[in-house]
Length: 376
Image (cartoon, rainbow, N blue to C red; front, side, top):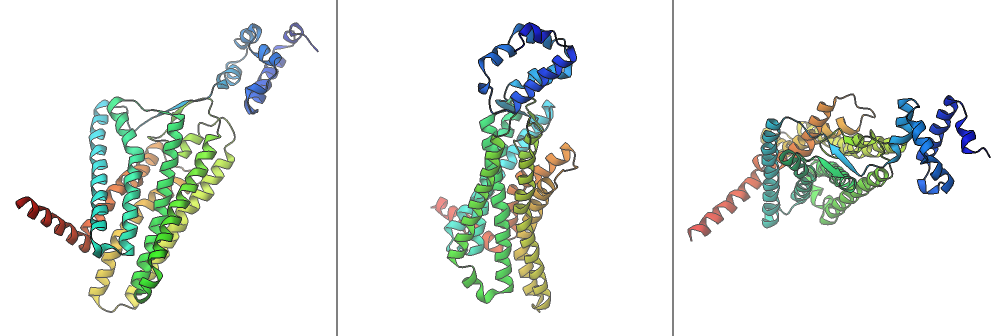
């Protein structure tokens, strides 16, 4: 075996290639612990460190800088302008409270009024729960960044945020599809509505929705946790999402991208197609079967709120996750994400309360009861 002095007598080009190949093998291996003590001593010897300053900058960077793992990430947020950060802090704080208040009102109103104990409102309660949790995943961290200028997040915290974001988001995507089918049965097959959408079917649909969302998110969380992050740790987003994290990977991400494009794409597209077909049948039924204008108007009013929510949510999700390689700019991608992660949870209670006569009637009744109690 050649001694170290013999090794250093090799030409510079050969030395450079050998050092680069050694470090590439180390980075692609399972762990540094598998190296023999002789290799460990060699790689940390003064000669190696001295020689690293004389080899090309690119080679030195590739060989030595990627030896450490990333323990935290830095989110870029929405802006670095202090005045704009203050404005955005109060804006998103207002939107967050509006989301919490509106969805909480829907929860208590629906649960407290027996007249609203129907399949449609059962799904609406689940949607409100999802929206409360969904906005809580991203907004509090964003508000903290605006307030203290601290946009760092630990590796575990990043994975946790990623998991709950995709858990709640995919569950909502599936639930909106179930709600579209519920409206289809209620309008196009009203005589069999109570038979088809019975209590067991509704509970089963919700359980499948939440379970599928959880397993989908767990898959991405486990796969992302196996990625080796060794270099830059700046996430080009305001929260930890899969695509921005994959851009920081130091290993192959082919499987991660395949799962994202296929599985996540299907979870977004399948309920969207179900919703689209449901509303085609609803519209066809209303124009061909329903003769009176009043009945048509009432049916359209019932579906208008759900259709508005579906348009906002699916449009953003499809633009973000369905294209294998998005051509959007960073600003466009962030704006699209804001629409379905923050604006939609705020819009849901407003749409369902302002456009739904039954909910408005129950809310007015509750407010009248509260006033009577105060007077007494």
